[in-house]
Image (cartoon, rainbow, N blue to C red; front, side, top):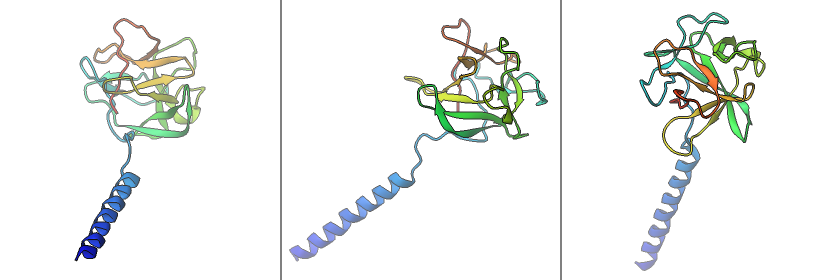
Length: 170
């Protein structure tokens, strides 16, 4: 009888360990979602939008935002942060980027294929605490920001920045 309980105990423990291992192996970590509106985590919580998505059109804050796909570029930069493109779901060849004028800081619609030169690659940084993420542009050495006003253009800015909202939902 004692041997029977030992065997059952070993089987139960083995099953628990196996299920736990499977759970760890198949349970995704904090993954970045695709096909969602991306919004400010604070303030009015407006979202990344664009009234039109023609090349060069401004990217602005809207109430509901556009559906954005986070396209993983497959590499890291800027301290080991994964790099993504903020791709418009309505036309996946277009992304949130920066104008060709390097001194301009407002975001515009760019072809995703323009890469680093087009400012369409964003390193995703997690804050030390609290919700959201930061999107860092290595091209300009600044973070994606908003002024929390409806129809306000998104821009890149450095810290500190009075009236800037840097954290975004994903």
